[in-house]
Structures are given as structure tokens and as C-alpha cells.
Image (cartoon, rainbow, N blue to C red; front, side, top):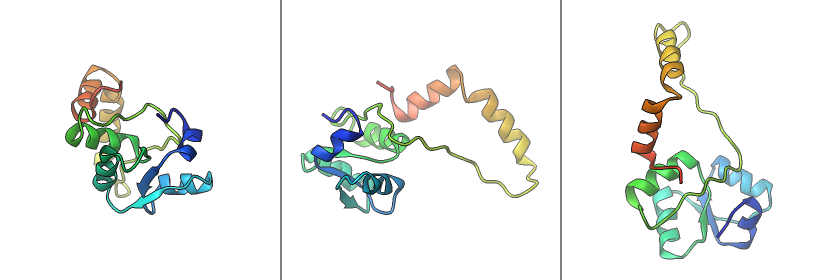
Length: 123
């Protein structure tokens, strides 16, 4: 089992083409099987044709929970943290409301319950 990024060079790894994950693997000299579709990559992983899939952790957690629950595991390892943003038009009247909502709900029991509901437990 892969525990960190260095372990990927010893296993059959897959990722999505033209992704930041593909860029990261290429920069590190780690070979990978390119995929156009995350579901196909995960199906190959479940079938034993790959040993690891590297991609956005939140998306992996969601797809694994909803389609591969019990058959695949998403590791806690993060190779390159990425931030998310909400784009709004300049001077949007929603900006203040969204900022307040994010600050109010982003950390706390309600947020954690939503994350668990959609992404599963972070085992």
C-alpha cells in the first residue's frame, strides 16, 4: 500500500490527463496511466489493473463513497494542498452574504455533518 508520494514510483498509478495531479506526477518523474474519466480510473483500480489513483481528494472521497464504498480506500495523504474559491462578478451583492455564511458554517458540527454526509468519514 502507498503511504506517501515516494511510494507511487513503485506501483501502477493512474490519474486524469491535463490535471494538476498529472502535472505533479510528471514533475516528480513518476510514471502514470492517463485517464479521461475518474470513474474509469477507479474501476481499473477496483479491478486490480492499477495500484493507486492520484487526484483531487474531495472528489475521490465523494466518488469512492458513492460508487465504490467498501471496495476502495482514500488515504489521508495530501501531496499538494489546493484551495477552492467561489467566483462572483465584481460588486456582487452576494459577496457579503457568502463570506458570512462560509465563516459561520465552515468549521463546526453542521459543516462536519455535511462533509461526512457527502464525502464519508475521513478515516
